[in-house]
Length: 80
Image 1 (tube, one colour):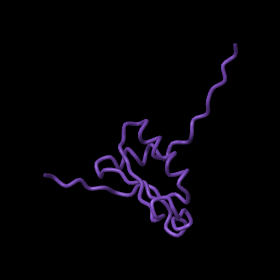
Image 2: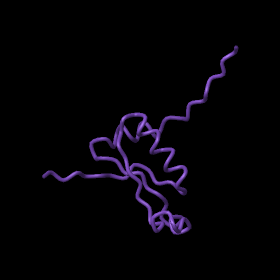
Image 3: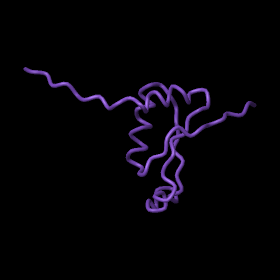
């Protein structure tokens, strides 16, 4: 069985930002996971010291960095 290597692509100060980043990666077809020391979300203040890190497979790191570097898209208004 081969070993899968993961690498950190970005660290966020709160879980909401990290989950939004994870959603952006998922939309781009990049699998990711979050690493946080917050007692399984039971103690959110614990994550404040180290943040919440988004991890991806090492082969997806460059693409993930590009996705996370993109500015957020704004919804277009349609008339009608």
